[in-house]
Amino acid sequence: MPVIEYPNPPSGSITGGYVYRGCRMPALRGTYFYADYMKGFIRSFVPADGKVARERDLTSDLTPPNSTLHLSSFGEDARGELYLVDHRQGAIYRIIPRKEG
Image 1 (tube, helix red, strand yellow):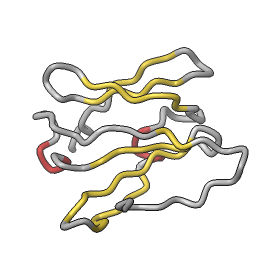
Image 2: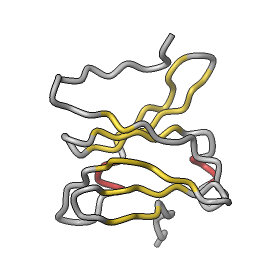
Image 3: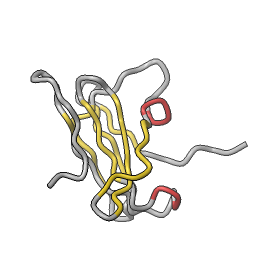
Image 4: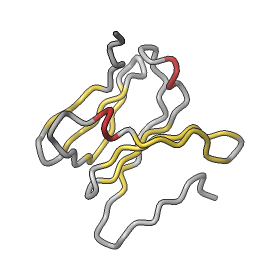
C-alpha cells in the first residue's frame, strides 16, 4: 500500500524523488522529496512506521526567486546530495543548506 496518496488531475504529473541521505543537511536525513511538474511545487515527508510524518511544502525554500520550476526528475550524487532537474528551463539545481545569520 502507498505511504502517501496525492490527488492528481488527469493533466498533472507527479515527479517521484529520493530519500535524502547526504551529509550537508543532517536534519533532513531520511526525508523523501517529490514534486508536481504542472503545479510547480516541491514537498517532502518522513516515512515512519508505514505512515507520513513531518510533511512539508518546500517550494518557497527550494525554488529560485521569481520562477516556477517544472521538475521532471531528481538526482543524487555519490555523497547522497540531491539535485532537481527543471525540464522547461533546462537547468539542474543542487539542494543546499540555507546560510544562517
